Amino acid sequence: MLLTSLMLAAAAPAAAIPDRAAERALFEKVVEIPTVAGRTAEFRRLTTLLGAEFARAGMTSIVKDHDGTQTLIARWRSPRPSGKKPILLMAHMDVVEAKASDWKNPPFEFREAGGYYLGRGSADNKAALVGIVLALQGLKASGFEPSRDIVVLFTGDEETSGNGARRAANEWRSLIDADYALNGDAGGGSVYADGRPQDWSMQIAEKTYADFTFSAVNRGGHSSRPRPDNAIYALANALAALERHRFKPMINEAVRGEAEQVAAEDKGTFGELVSKWLKDPTDRETADLIEAMSPGGTRTRCVPTMLSGGHAPNALAQKAEATVNCRIFPGVSIKATTAELQQLAGEDVTVSLVPGSSTPATAPTAIRPDVLAAYQAAVRTRFPGVPVIPGQSAGATDGAFLRAAGIPVYGFGGLWGIVGQSGNAHGLDERVLVEGFHGQVPIWREMLKRVAG
Ligand SMILES: [Zn+2]
Image 1 (cartoon, rainbow, N blue to C red):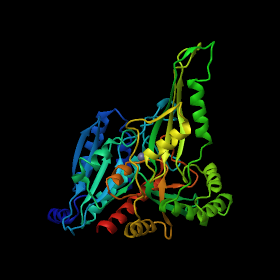
Image 2: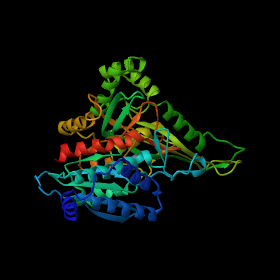
Image 3: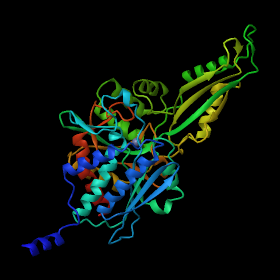
């Protein structure tokens, strides 16, 4: 008997495919490590844990210490290389700070309630991060042998500086270089409450993030003797001009794909507007109406987010300043945006880019039919016939740094949420759907079998 069990053990795969309880247990551990910017020791705890998990999948990992955080790069070396460049899988380990007193329960205490897993970072981005680890462990346990290397990049500062992705794309390029990247921080699906799938998204583009300062300076003086030149009025007029301004409507492959889907699905007013706009994307009036209902898709958007000025109630202001946050349409340069803002602001206000605030300006990643087909096939193993739509994020991710360095990036996710129910990423009581969390794992496995099998 002893001999038999030894033989069985020898013949069995190195580790078992993680079951649902093991999936949940790993997720719980990861969510309960508060990897908030500045807490370097917590990043060490998480990279130590993840390094051990990757080792269970037969993978080696390297941890980079940098900028007060860490980045983890792991590699599954192909035992039968086909000569194809690696596939890169991306996610981020850091989470947004949580103000515990505003939460119903402690933000870093993992909980399950009402069909959701709760905790800071559960939706953004630890569900996908754990999904990637579990999929790789499952593939290894099932005896899968990739025909190309699979590389993993987990950054520790996506929510703040983006230094991990910036460095990975440049100084650590040889460690992460890939045919293309699948970014688990974008993509994923929407399913109706009755279980019917709505659609899945493949992020191929993102807007450029940039902060600008609008600054008016003045020689000041006694407030009993006002003059026409006045820093506060100059700034106020510049901001009023910004409020009235509409950037030129624009379209690209990503926005068109999403708009076509809306036009096909939405038979109401919004769908009609989108159909009309698709026929003439230069139609400003229609684009304005779309922006009013669903902001951010049709153009660059800029909005003041902070304001300061003056130094005494009885003195003319010597300085007035506003921070203006812009989300710039892909393909439009920061330089051109600065010039457009300066034009609006007038000569009494100086517009300048806040140094280090911007993500690189990137063009959309060209859709690769093989990647899109693999994504569709992987998702359809769970939701037959569901459409997978290429799209553009209004927000920014680590993907921009890789796109800027010439690595195609596809926002990919097996995770899904319920239409109309938010995961509240960055917000209070952040959560992720229990079924979506577990359901993503076989979708990731299926995707990797298709692109690296
Ligand atoms: Zn994120």
